[in-house]
Image (cartoon, rainbow over all chains, first blue to last red; front, side, top):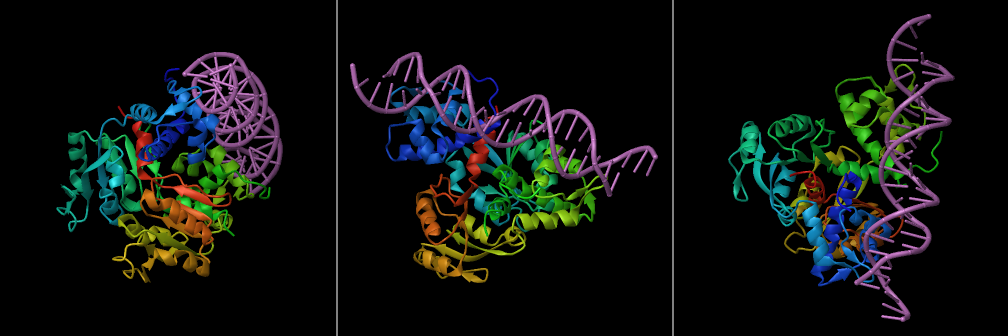
Length: 206
Length: 206
DNA sequence: TAGATTGTTAATCGATTAACAATC
DNA sequence: TAGATTGTTAATCGATTAACAATC
């Protein structure tokens, strides 16, 4: 079966499978089954087989999936066989932490441009890079062809920053600001507001 | 209609509605409609009405929802009319940033206990608190009755930390570590691995 | 009153699960 | 071969949407 139009909810599970497979690989495991992978990530075996079958036949009856092979397929599917440059806006505590976070560059994303609007921060070195002025954002990002942005500014500034990113050609935004962003079709946003996660779980507490 | 057994997917949208309503309130708006709120958060008006109707009749035909009233109802439903203490484990860059993040304490959660296993960090002051030794985690959390934990340690240590949190009575975990956690029924986990969000969006890039 | 918008029902749509023939 | 596990189909389950009477 080849790729027709894959539901986004399936696409969303692939990075989770990938993460688990890498973990198994680090433990020198060679193969796994939908059963085992499912237990690891908390998803039914049937669903994992169904999800993967959207993209091809990656397993073998009787033995399961070769881990290295499946990782490679997932990297292809998710277009992760390249490092992507990322622009990060807002060098507060969170922006700082993310720009230094090894977990991004390990997994396909490298923060190469960082911006802030605070004159005290502009010019500061971060990693190999220097904090640039927000006013240069659109031109610099467009010139660099960067398609991925991370918003770490306060809620009050987030929509305006998003608008500029989109103007600059960014089509994938990771949003740490606690606000829903209005974006045109074709632009994707992933929200990582910690308070939303906590408030959601709060419902189940006493 | 009173609360029977609400699907988690609905519970998960309530904090997003709440966040948008607060934003409207900050702009001095008095009332809103399912239509308007839906446009703001990117969800259909019908769905918002259906979601809210699970918990009561909060609107008025012809005029919509009183914002202050609806906020108050959502706070009640989500059990957010109290400040909850939170334990944070792992004082690396991310843990540091989170422990100082105003956006948590503004919205019902206060980091009051912080732990690390690095002798250089133990004893360090963070906010009004002092970084404690991981080995004290279970006893301290249990004694304080804290039910919410945030994991900011590397993937290699996260499951062990989760086990300790659960042993100490925590039932809601916000997990920044890039790994799926194995937890017993009754314990909830929200995942905030930034790479998963980016990899998911990567599928739609060239 | 006329217009607007709710809460709810029924219809639609989509996602998950169960089951099993195929086959390694 | 016998046992295990895939990929896929059909059945089930759940979530979303459309539509509208009720009513502010």
